[in-house]
Amino acid sequence: MRAAIVTQIVVAALLCTRGAYATAGFAETHSRLEYGSLASLQWVHPGDGCDRGRYCFFLERSGAPARGFRGIAFSLAQINAPAEEDRGLIFAQRSDGGWLVYDLRAEEFLAQPGSFERAAQAWRAAGLTEPRFAEAEHGARGLSRTWASRFEDLTWLALMWLPALLLLALPLGTLGFVIFLVRYRRQRKPLQLVWGFLFLLLSLPAWLLFGRVLVSMIQYRGR
Image (cartoon, rainbow, N blue to C red; front, side, top):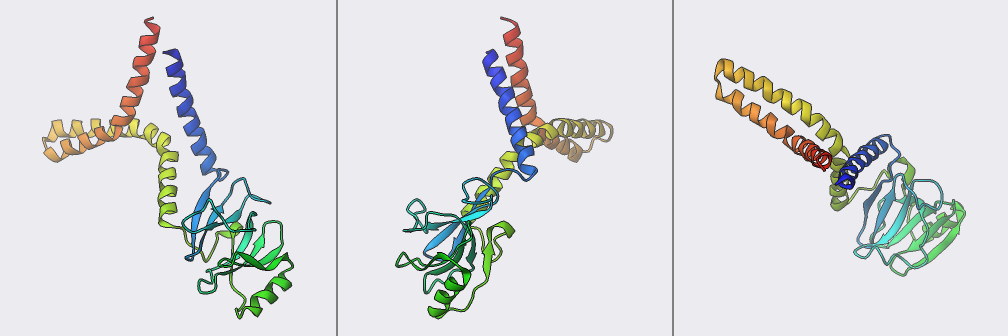
């Protein structure tokens, strides 16, 4: 029983610490970006796993991200945006600095990682004009997140703030319930009673959690 109480306290502390850590801007964050019909991008902003720095893209095969593309086993700092869907070509910079041109359909390099000038020459030789680049470290402008990624981000944000919301819900919900209950007893307006119970419902999850911990502590002391 004591272990259960300690576990509950530790989990709550870790959640609060994780939330504070994330809001400070140091949490590891990954999002999936749309990138045409052939590929998608995993955007690390910030996080671990990049070949250099904490901001990068990883090129993934659309519909089968675990497979990837032949020869592309490194992270990218910049990539052309949007993708040249009709040709399936990308113009990108590796996290370590080398520029490349790659054919997604043929899965081969038109320009191996090297200087920008050589990559730009291969790009122009394919009949394309110099593109705009999306930078991993500067908001990935020109690219958009997938709907699944947006939902995951919102879900994580809700979980991250859940401990803080529970701590706020307990005093605020209880105070709101008491205020509207007192007003109802004085004025006898049904709407005030409804508002009071809404505030009570707001604080109910926090009260249930508090009660569970309290009961566990009482049961442990009684042994």
